Image (cartoon, rainbow, N blue to C red):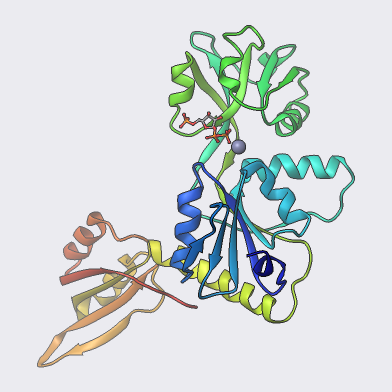
Length: 303
Ligand code: PRP
Ligand code: ZN
């Protein structure tokens, strides 16, 4: 086990151990073709068919693990990336991790939560207030940009109890469904950061075989994200309506036009749509003259 860890040729990816990003992150890697076995301690997933290992860690540790080149890649929320980025910059650190791309899960917001019944009239209202948060740097940055001075009460968790304990007037915390806020008689007043799961990469350049594998993995990730939205659509179209019909196909570049045996007036149109195809689109296509429509999911895609 330790042997494999020290082999530098393997790509190490840091993923949240347990939380909102865990399942989606592992699923993404599996869809990229990775099969793995989980170590006894459950903290490392060893890739069996690719030189890729997944380290399951606390999400707050992920930016540091990647910035210090202990892991080559990390999947973590933009909220945590941003907080850590501001911290590193304030420490004069030059070599940060780089953001490779935004993923399609882990959507949430960093927002102000105010006690129910207290209206929010804009940033100026925060002047002199006590705000509890686990994101002191993002909050400080926001207050500074808005020319407001407030007292930041730093918490390491369970921020939502601060107002009822009398420790803060309001909070600044992550909101997803909003149920945590509601359960504590708070409401979401304003958002200061929209967050999503994001892939980050070590500042150190990778070389050789490892660099090639990283490139392959990143292309596969792109492919996985693309196919989720993509559909393959087939339909029959009157030649006279071909232009109108192809214009209606969402996010498709150049459809394939195939003649229909024994028909001069109609052709078959096959196209990859890079956006989801909804019922409304099919109805519009029908209106434009299309018939025999078939929409299929796309399994894999490689540019
Ligand atoms: C955040 C936040 C709330 C909860 C909000 O914590 O601190 O507790 O999510 O989600 P909701 O709007 O769906 O109720 P998170 O799960 O990120 O855990 P952590 O802060 O301990 O990392
Ligand atoms: Zn956390």
